[in-house]
Image (tube, rainbow over all chains, first blue to last red; front, side, top):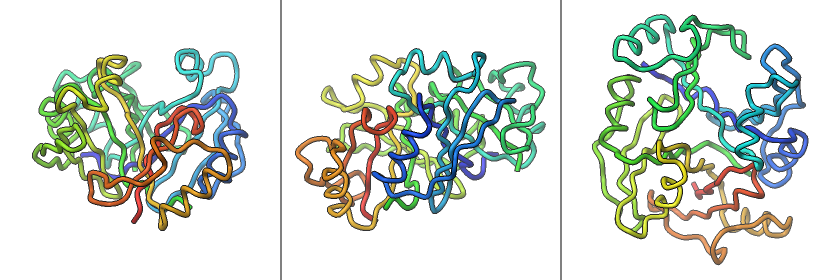
Length: 134
Length: 134
């Protein structure tokens, strides 16, 4: 079912500072920051040879990252995103097994303009998983 | 400097159970478990189209995962591993910038039989980073 690792999302307090770490210390190719107010994040993309890292700073008071950063003030891996061919088939397969899909179970349009769902960390080795339709 | 994302390592309490989650719920290709007593882990490799996930269970009392799982009993992302062409050049570049390399700064032979170093999470967005020479 899952195909490529689309990205690893790392929550950070300050995306400009995190961007410098990835660019200057780790020598990676880093995009300029872009604001995604609909998703409550300011994001920088780190392009690796086979996938990407997304550095996410909370944007606005209702950001989904606020709680995570309150618990992890240095930042940390927030979620991993796996690609699937058919997100509705993936959801139905997971629900039939009793695995928890977050929210109302209906895919939303994610930050890349594609359909996404998030899965409950407690059912997936303590890891928040995003599924994105290819 | 950093090239491919070699793997994402997820610490789990029970690798057999985690393996079933990745195989049966997420439909991924999963290896049999293998013990790596020198590294204090039992590992299962999840093969994705562009990288891999390593599911790591502590092996032995001195496992480097024990503290992590005590703090995160459901498991969670333990580290991410980036490939570099020249690990000594990478280390020297990082140290010259004041970024902390863990241990004595000398590369060790990692779980894949290649030279590795770990970087201090506080200097890298709260993320434990492994560098592996290609």
